[in-house]
Length: 431
Ligand code: AMP
Image (cartoon, rainbow, N blue to C red; front, top):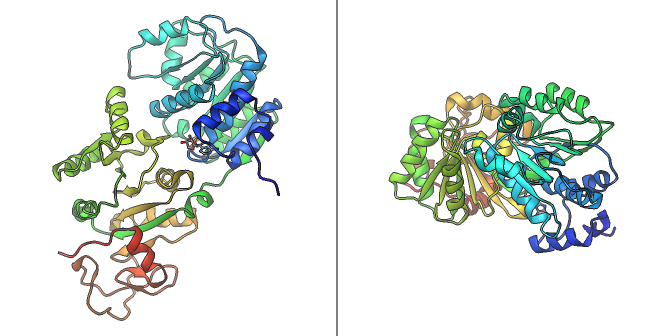
């Protein structure tokens, strides 16, 4: 079967050139399905998470259609609107639009909270074609009369499920009420809770539905390991893991802003260059932290789920779940930050006894049992023969157990995966 190329999707030479400059060899599955349909004028419901190439899936046809329409935007009245739940994601989408539309004469801007509104007001007064925005600030500026929404011909709602989680859904609905009825609409969401499904029904007109399942896309390339460890021992475990230099670019997830700060402080004290990003940090501090991490000037970035949404940094070698997330879907989002674009990566999860039910939720969602590196499941420690010599971490007094996939484990690592685990994931150093 001939492989699908970007040019076979109906994209113009100007856009193909921009894609070559980005080094994209071929369209991802969501791009293959979404681009021709959007170019044909259909609405789209995309069930996909960050890491699947979904931004280009909507940005390329939006850019091409706007350029083909040969209209000029009026001051204060953009032609396309993309709503994203977080500032980081909005900036990233804006950057992508700029790169993909490099050869097109379209103007764009990004509107987000946490920074002064003056420059945004000034930008909107110009003839802007594409606005990428977080909902709160856009609504503020709309209510102050700095932007009109009645010329929008393309509306993209990205990460709709996260909008809901973050309490933005009322702002989003309020914005939608201001849009013209005749427009093309696209909704992207990693999951489809009932509220998102009903929103999709409200705003989309006979949409095409395109689904890329996250579990299947991540499981194959990310080595997923679990360390059973008490909460009080997690800092020590992190310290020992960081001795291994193969953990070269490490994204650590903590559940709260406060915990993220504490973990970052702990890592800094080890002499490891680190930063934290979360909602209490100013937008400029978050951008600076991201740039340092991207440039390799910091080795560890500690983040909360919300701050890390849409975070796009190449070459993240390891994702560490210092704490397991409450929602299993967040686990899939977290580990999707590593092993991008075909590379491999590791996700190491620290599981305290109080987090056993979260672990179960993750395994149920992804359909796989995480490989045990250290300790044993707190709820099912079945004793089998004591392995000679080495014990995990030199601390566990329990014998090896049985993993939940039924394989016998030794030193906490299942037989059939032991070599791979040793190579890819740092085993703890004794002593
Ligand atoms: P996204 O899901 O939009 O966040 O994209 C994830 C990453 O994949 C980004 O770094 C994109 O630049 C990259 N990407 C998007 N499309 C392609 C493609 N067709 N080939 C290679 N990389 C891509």
